[in-house]
Image 1 (tube, rainbow, N blue to C red):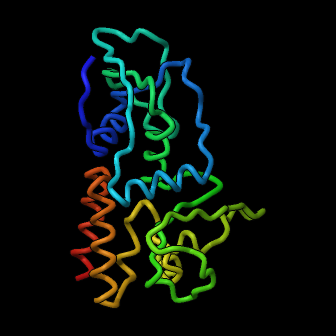
Image 2 (image 1 turned 90 degrees about the vertical axis):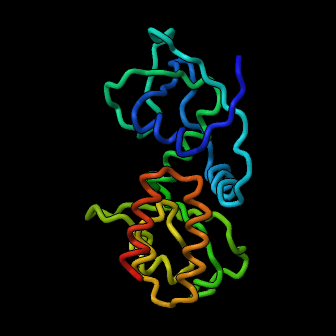
Length: 203
């Protein structure tokens, strides 16, 4: 058994390429919204994410396995089975895509909040907003999917790809860039590149 540090971007890459899967005996997603928000804040503050236990597969899988929730189901060769840590890695994969059906996750930045409706929200914290569908199929509240409206509320979506396009205040943009860079230092390279392209395009 060997202990080693692995960057979050490396975990992301293994999930994306289907190189790591879950043994069938692992339970399904169980984390509630508060634990997911706590995990987001752990990333923001650049704190350790905890211990993860893997089993190297070698020449063949030892257990019947399944993909992490919403991960690409492609036919790559599996290198590892995830024995402990799947709640954290599944949550991280999903918040980097913000693909939960009934909630959307944000990072709250007080200085960007033009509404100041909820004074109890603390700066640089994670926030979730419940979502629902109307009969016409639209997902409400609509502002959650509108970059300009989310920024007016100080809410930065955890996928971090759109809000920089609508920020025109240069002082605010500089701080927003610092915050996003802090988060994307742990985020996957593909998202970091997309974010940097938006920043360059908007200069």
